[in-house]
Length: 445
Image (cartoon, rainbow, N blue to C red; front, side):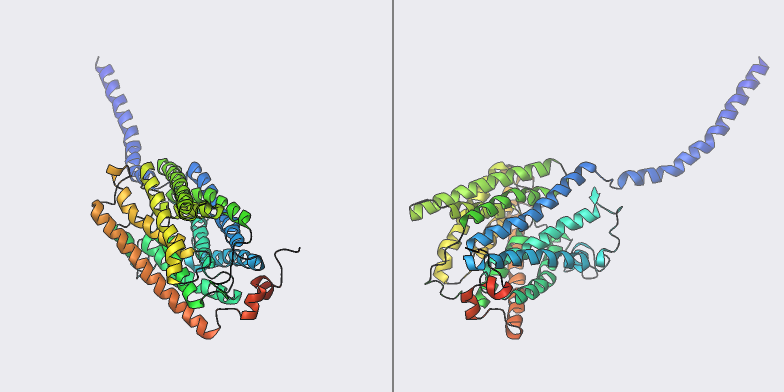
């Protein structure tokens, strides 16, 4: 018995001696295992969706917005707007990669206003670097497509009269001094983000920002020769409807893609985008039918764009019924601004960039604070907010964007006007920008 007991003790002691170092090693590895679990891992599903969304947003500019605008101008200027959108796509891509992404998306010593220089020339953006659950290179490129379409929207306000060279310089300065700071304010941890403003996909950053800059451009350049006495109807509404249809489809990448994941919020963003756009298209159609006796193709297409604009800031927080209300309100106010107020005030915003993107953007940004509330079917207000305080913060973000973007855009335009000049000559405008700026014709008939 004693020998058996001694054997048992020896066996237990041996096992204990064997397990102790293993247990100690396990405890030493535990912090690393916990840290590894806390670190985001690459999601193939999220990555696949964001690759698709990025392509869809680029599709919104070329060919979507390009064709939408091209059909609305006169035939002698069709190539000029196509060229402007195409050139903007190239220039903004380079600027975003060189310094735009870094100044927008990183932290800096003046972080409330602008980011830092850590990612200049995409330093540190490698095959392995992540942004959440997707490659950082993909996040950077997704945001690049936003930096492309936002200045491209402004083209519609000065269509048919701005020099191509002046347009390129203006857009370069505008991206640097206006778009990048406002992106950082809202999405990069700047002062608007700290206040708790909701802007899921770009109501302030994209639409109000571009809309007010477009209005400044229309005012500084002045009216087109012959406006408003000379009829200047769209030369090809077929192109415009095709462009609007492409914008509608591409906008799913714009809004649902802004979740940066393939999840329930992205699914709801797609749903509310569809509903708001449908409501807005019909609202404009019936408003025009009541006011002018007939529904027009241009009206329903423009209404759809107004709905897409209005739901953009609310697409991650509004519910389906909230989306219908936002689409209706966005289209109604945009219709009044584009068909009534514009003529009362007499300014020449050629393709109604302010009336559609600016006005519908303001309506959507403010109503985001209403329909995010859970009692109205939304996903919830920002932390610590009531509906009243959320709406007030939304108003602050709208006013800040209008004042800063409008003011800086005006200064840039006035400096360029006084130095290199903004506008083509009267002879060149009469001849058309296709020939005078590019020595080409859109149609050989």
